[in-house]
Image 1 (cartoon, rainbow, N blue to C red):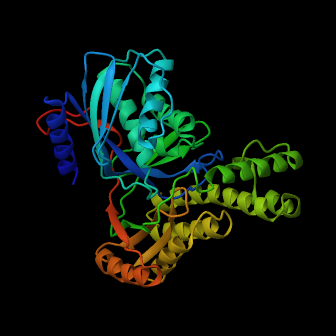
Image 2 (cartoon, helix red, strand yellow):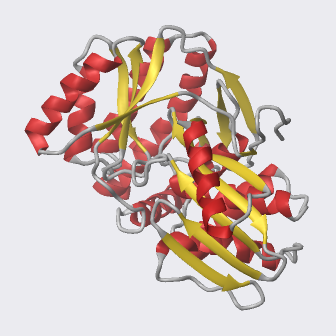
Image 3 (tube, one colour):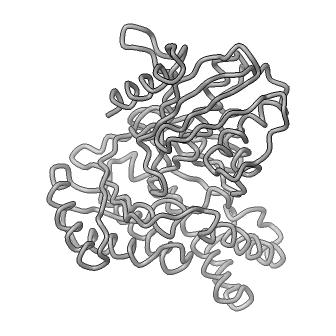
Length: 395
């Protein structure tokens, strides 16, 4: 699939620009094993890059003019870098314009370019296709024009692009995972300091299966920003009563329980979920280190219960997929993944059981909702990189 993506993107570039691209880049989507909705709450998260990619074919244009082609959307956007960059009604281009604006503000040596991009990262499935585009373009521009940005700077440019040009106040996890991904490793990321550590994971006789509800969402309309406001409000109340609390990380479950009435039902539920989820990430790292995969599965299922009942970012379709999976003896754990209100569930399952599981749950899902289920078996891959043909060395 990766080879086909690269081939199709390259051929499309050659057809439209009548030249070969000078560079090819691959920027992966991501999964998050555990640690949902805590990346913007100073928590720890446990993401990994996956073998679904945005492929970018690019060449300098020798002027200040740029032409970007979204192959999958069959859309073209042209502009001049000398002109002011502003958000556009065509949402897809804002992920890239926001990145270019960051380069301009940093006075980096930008020139015009032509680009074609295509993707195998499903849109709206909670696999961070937007971060893959942002970080892919930031990485590509950095390489193409020798800007000497660090990986961390590239991730932060991607995040700020989303804040400023897309209007989504996202945390750093998606961009970080896309850029820093490492094959067969999960990343324990401290979203507060951006310190991180890799943990090698060998799932042995288990694998990761994503079930796509085919219910599409965008963070802009999904209540994501509302949840952020609610937890900020909750943390402010907690700090008033417990001055030693700086972030949710040093807030205990006991503190939240003591303030149940003061916080009110909704804010209490949000804060309780966040505190518990931060602890679950620590527990999950221990489980991975000791290959205690049943424990990891249980933690994933607990996370879903919290996301559905306390953080209230799930939906009937995802709750159904998770419940059906959890009934199967071959499934160790299942939960909603991503911002919520649709997208994918992530399932830790016994290797070899995937096909039967997909067939069974697809049928149940179709009967219940009349929706076709999509599924993706994923492997943990490396992060954003320049693609070199097999006889050339990769960066």
